[in-house]
Amino acid sequence: MSTFALLLAACGGSREPVYIGVAGPLSAANGASMKAAAEMAAAEINAKGGIGGRRPVKLVFMDDGGDPQKAIQVAKTLRDSDSIVAVIGHVGSSASIAAAPIYNALDHEGDPVVQISPASSSPALREAGDWTFRVTPTDLEFSPALAQWAAQRLGRRRAAVLYANDDYGQGVRTTFERAFQAGGGAVVTADPYLPAVLARGDELDPYLSRAIRRGADALVIGGQAEAGAKIVAAARRLGYTGPILGSDGLTGLKDAGPVAEGVFVSSAFLPDRPAAEAQRFVTSYRQRTQKLPDHRGAMTYDVMYLLSAAIEHAGTDREAIRDYVASIGNGRDGHQGVSGLIQFDEMGDVRGKEVSVGVVRGGQLVTAGRQ
Image (tube, rainbow, N blue to C red; front, side, top):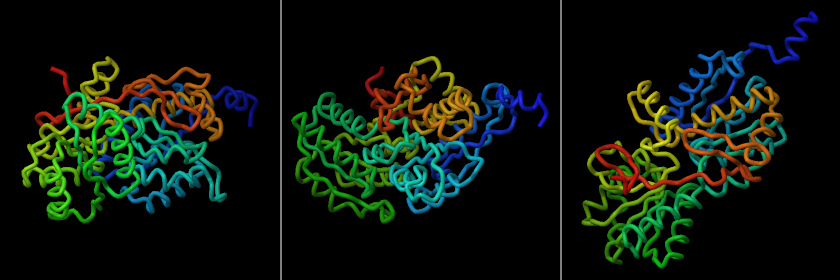
């Protein structure tokens, strides 16, 4: 290599692409915004010359189908690729928890790579390892916000909980029940369900009927939007007229039509967030996709720019990127994103991230209580 080439490399002058993995249920409703936001951020970064104005971003998309077993295979492929310097993913808590040991190289079969989840909220992910981070609050923040809303804003005292029997659903159930009871409420029923068996929509009628008989005046759903829409419809069909609430997994319920009207959802990002950068993002995303972004999209967008900053300052060495990410909020200023300030604690969880309660109005999820 010539002296000039060596000097250029030492100064970070390489224009080789930087490869970032993006893993999630990309073909499903809860992964579409993740993919669109990652593509949007990459296009913006590359339009300015790439990371640091010189290195273009190349995204490597891998679809885990929301399946923990498939997520493990996806993680192995991304971790074992010499070109991948960081991974954004996964979306679902179960997939992220299953994949985390691979990214952390706990199997001792490869070199670890940093994993940053935009939307996995199960508290269990906190113990995943030093290479796993997330930019979403956990159910320890989401569920208390719902419990407070149900008790203080809606005056409810007897809640029924239906939750998907997975890491996410169990986390919602446990954290909501604890917060609601601490506020003086009671959980009159708490029943699990398997989303795959909710085909006709009446499979949970016995659980819902029992909740109604026991005087439930609030219904809480810990699951994803597709199953959530069937539960809402079944509850209304059986005569339940009280409020229905859910954590961030229900964000897509806004697309379910009139049945979703008035359902409350806690989220770390709502598209009517008034901050100027948030509204610029919403406008650009809507122009690009003809849709409004959800929290998964907003926080994927934030992770893309966070990683761009990490790579610009630390280079493409995996360990250097991981150390830079870990320092955000720990000796280094927090990263200001469209979803708010991002700073990590010593376990890789985001600290102090705001949680809002939204409500479905006319097919959109808007901030509840805002006139």
